[in-house]
Length: 114
Length: 112
Image (cartoon, rainbow over the protein chains, first blue to last red):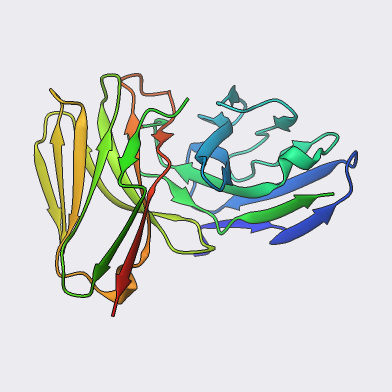
């Protein structure tokens, strides 16, 4: 069982380019999340999905979009990357309701926007 | 905005000593969770304590929750070099469909 996988592991991207970070889980969890982690700012929620077909905005959603077409996949898209989106991005999932259960995290994607 | 705030921001201790980290939060919660993050890795869930619980143990971990003070503490006893990591608290609001809110973390260094 892989748990949660993220791709790519790292990426250097030119400003203005479009980029999709991939996240796949094989645990059949209902809820999925995208966070960014920046030094000194901790973990901040970008978008989340409580179940397939639904999404919600987190603390820092601007410049990002998500979709949840099925249970397993939750891609995060940067339509036009900017340097302030340089960060480490973590995908996570949880079995049931958004906050009643523990979250399982992927290994992260390190993104640098130049 | 982040609800959980960990204290201290950084902690350095000798192997064998106990490490205590604190978390304060602002609004009522359903539960509070502690996570660990090794450098360059994703977070790993350690323990969940519900609002009607006051103390919980898991191996060398002891978590307390004081809802009247809106605070929690994580105690790691007999620390090991392998405990070196960042530790985060996360608060779960009462609404089941509202995601966890993570604090900024405490960076623990255990010196062998």
